[in-house]
Structure formats: C-alpha cells, structure tokens
Image 1 (tube, rainbow, N blue to C red):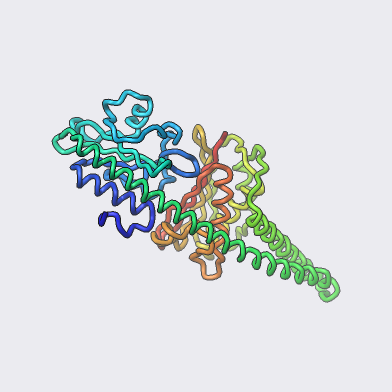
Image 2: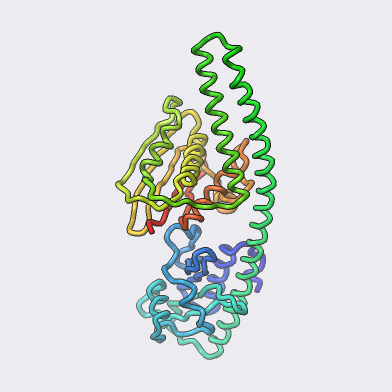
Length: 374
C-alpha cells in the first residue's frame, strides 16, 4: 500500500504498519512483534503506545518461534484458551478496561513465520466482522511478505559489507605487519645508536609496546577473516575491566570513575572479551580528548551480567547511531577505519550477548554490554 511504500528498513516499515492498522480498524492500541532471526524470540518492533527504537532496551519477550508456527489465521486473543494465547496476552495488555477483545494477526510469507500483530482497544469495542477477519488475514500475509523481503535485502547488504571488510582487513593486516617488521628492526638497532641510557630505555619501551599492539591488531584482523572461535572460561568481569583501565594513562587530564558491583563469574572467552573492553575504553578516551570523564560500571541481574562505558565526549548524531554505528567501514572518527565496533558486536553476538549504545551529540555516549550468565 501507499502507507508503507518507500520504507527501506524494518523499523520504519513496522511503525507504518501499526499506524495503518490503527487507522483502518479504529484500534487505539496496536503492537507489532517480529521474530529476531538470531534468538528466534519475538521482539517488539513497533507500537502505537511505545515505539521500540532500540530493541535491545528490554523489548524482547520470552516467546520463541517454535510456539507460534501453527498460527495461520487471525483469532480472538481473549477468547482463545491455548497456552500460546495466554503467553501473548501477558505481553500485550490493552490500555483501556472496556476496549473490547484483542485480535492477533499472524504475519506469514509462504512457510516463513515472521511475527504477529495485536490489535486492542477498538473504539466503542465494536466486534470484528467476518469480512474484517478476512481483510486482516490478507494484510498479515502482505506484511509478512514485505518483512521477509526487507530481511533478505538486509542480509544481502550485510554479506556484501562483510566481503568488503575482509578485503580491507587483509590490506590492514599486511600494512601493519610491514610496520611491525620495521619497528622490530629499529628496536634491534637502537642500543647501538643511543648513548643516553634513560632516553634509550624509554624509546625501547615505547617501541616495544607499539610492536606488541600492532601484532595484536594483526591477530584480531586474522580472526575477523576466519570467524570467531570462543574458548569460554569462568571470567572475572570486574577484574578484566580493572586490568584494562590500568592500561590507559591517568596523567592526561581524563577522570576515570569505577563503579563495580559484586558479580558472579561470566562464561566467556577472556581474550575476545578483552578486545571489546579495550575498544570501548579507547573510544571513550578519544571522545573526551584531553579533559573529561569516563565512567565504567558493572551490575548483574538473575540472567545477565553487564558493564557500561560512559563518556562526556562529543557524542553521536541520532542518524549515525541508528543506521551506521555497528556496521563495518562506518565511523564518525576522522582517522577511524570503522572496524572496532563491528568486531565488538561480532564478539558479543558470539557470546549470545547484547551490545547497545545511547548517545547525544555534544553530550556523550554510553555503551552497554550484556552477557548471559548461563
């Protein structure tokens, strides 16, 4: 329809669909739940009551795809007595006490089950007619087909971006390897050419650190090409964060704040997780410049351990945050390569975790990483 034409991403499309359903059927509360391809769980994509701009902020339900494959036609959610209906009722409460029965509309495309739309709080609680049920089924099939097309297009784009990233990382690794070889040669010759013991010691230490850092980057680029292989161990997240913070200078005017809660051990690949931590701390340090504050916090819930890295730096625009932040070859830095956050997300995803960001241009940024405890 014209109402959804031109929507190039799933978030925009879902918002337009909820508005269309609300206006067409005089339903004041419409929510649209879409299956997350990674977790197979239903996540709130859009709602007339609350727009889910950030699916990682608590809008994912505990409902999995396997529970809903048998749903093919719209049905009265309040009259249906199945366990599936009870689960849907629990996550889609209406706003008004006398708003009439809720209607659930499966979103399907051929053999693909994409999600479900729930209409509630119809004006004057008018019952739905047989003709309206048929119309809802047609809309559900059309929305499902459109969602599938958008997901396939997104997957193709991601594949092409990753192929480009592989090419860039190959050049990146090659150039860094050459630089490391050059610095290693300098490291060998420095004792011969420098007579000042203190200067020589500082130079040797600085070049040694540079060589080590470059070799680490080469290793990470190689792993990025080959794919991630996790070696999970019981990891002290607080300890890892403290070690990482100690690697950054405390004498450059930046104020570092640590707020650590007591945490259980996290089953994680310590080396890979350290890459995420170092990247987020480095980003924060670069964002605040010579002065500012970087805050590192930890906390835990029943199922998750999490850490947050906040800075008082330049922040990011809403457009960059929404469309470019975790994509490869996208960066807001003048000299950035756009690899770090993409790799960080790959690592967090491999741990079945979540990474998200909240930012405001000119006011700073907070990155949040959640890791499962099981």
